Image (cartoon, rainbow, N blue to C red; front, top):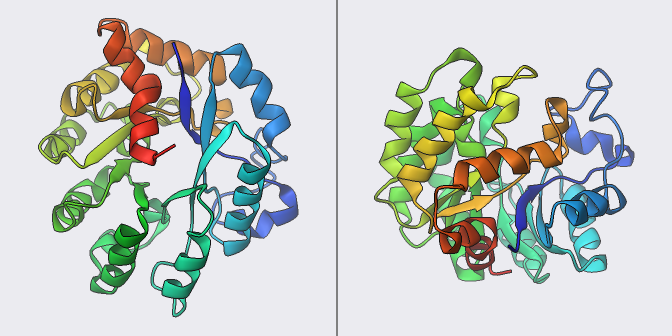
Length: 277
């Protein structure tokens, strides 16, 4: 079965300033360079044919770095990058970045912004309209407190392809399933919104268990269905609590009851269609 990983991060400490929102030497597992030479053996060992790189930083230098890696490695099928969506030169900058066909989408750091309603800012509208014109997608990196504002946002833009990263980061380690599931239910009827099966083991913590994470996966599979889900690893962040192969094993278990054709959609086909890979 073909596999596309829609959520990998590569970074270099040479650009540590780009990762200032989260990176520090205290995170020993992550405080090092991660790049193609680290990822390819893991992908090969787990039958993963290609990946989408997603921004880990919030500078234009990082976007240039990721696009350069994509241009030099065929297994990197696309890039989702960060831009200053309300910056004074955003129209010019976005048009220039989009000349590179490996740029597939944009991702602001919504989870780290002080304003939970940032996504509803009226001055985002010109940038969103330009993204539509350029054929770009929108990754939303959110936590449960952002879900309802995100629903309001995507309702404004029914033609914008939107994908929810990490299942909106449910607080699994607190057992907060009911409120998260209720809010995520609002996406069921919004057919232009997809979701990544990614990034949730870290929301349970180092002592994560299959029994605790499976209800969250089952909820998302029910809400979005096999046509609006994609696989992502959140590597190397997943290394904080597990590893690449273990997460693939969790997703395999979550999908095993689905027909093979639906599993193939989630593992690869939906990603290729959504991101235009």
